[in-house]
Length: 494
Image (tube, rainbow, N blue to C red; front, side):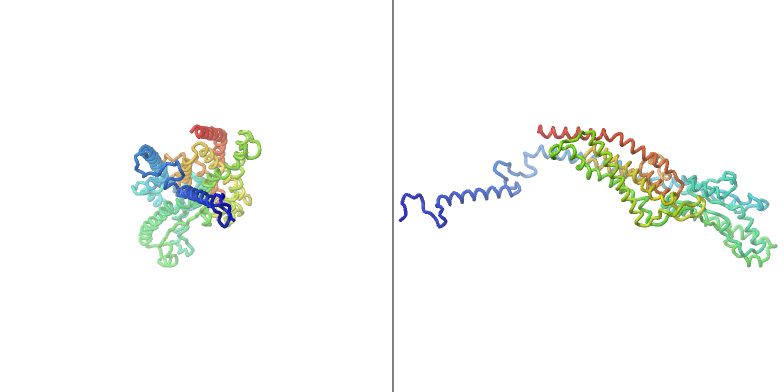
């Protein structure tokens, strides 16, 4: 029998109808709240939050003006940065055509200056020097031909080669002492072994800057050769044909003495090869800057653990953190530069060929023998430290997002002064000789190709960069701490 005093009937689960109604109401309210929280705020979000309004609502007028002002200021800054900094890259090539005359080429006429050829009137030597002097007066782009007397080189053509190797000139045109004499003897005696290429020499060092040679120097020197052989051929043919004492059989025996009569032997003392060496002295070096730059954001969180007391340990003193950061960064550069150098070794750039005489043609000689790779690695290590510590200091001073502009500036100024010849750039770019990447490239080329070495000067400049940034490093660390504490204080006050 059912008790009539019971409030409400019970269902099959033993719950009263009143309890069911209460539970359903709570679930409905909970679902509505969950729906508001999950709508992303588009329908008002949780109770009490402001309702979304259109962008041009009157209540957003002040915010719209503020946002537009910030946007306009940022665009103005970026546009100004683009015009100012990117122009440095364009400007380095702006006067290349007019500055080709700064690429010095020695013209040394030995023709008829030494025994037993002094009694023979020289013909070829004066023609070459006259032609180059005419080119110097031409309004067209031309090389900087400089006529030098043989006495400046102790009357020794090998000393001219040495001057080119030592970077006193980009190339040299040498008229051999027997140029006219051997040619005259060839037609007089019918010398079948006469070689026209023995008349003149062109000497250069391609590995010094392969792009400069292929784009500006060799095309002009080839044009000079064409002019000389053409003019001399006409002159010489006329002289020979007017000389009736020369038997026709002599000309038949040595036709090369009549045409082409003279030629130029080319001596590339240090060819640029293999092709895989290109990244090691050009674009590949950009990654030294980029890797050093981004290593800051990778390592900083690791170092900062030492001064966070909520990590389950007491913090260290801040000056000790500075020491850890400095030596940690340089140790990272030490191993990262080794990994970078291993790439060149893996792709079989020669590092153990031994050295060669300065004045002979040699393919990939190594100036330090089997120690060449270690020297190459150390150049990359010191260079990475010079580039990277500057990035660390600037990152601590300017912070995000402005440090990205620093990276662009650092890359452009270094690339402009390292990958393009400063001899062809406007004189204003002379500061580039002191920039890190310029010295890394020069030291790398001398190490990989056994060029005239200025590695002492190059490393000296890089160490100056390291020293300056090492001195600024603690200052920048304390500035970053001050800036961080100030931002935290502002955040608490707001």
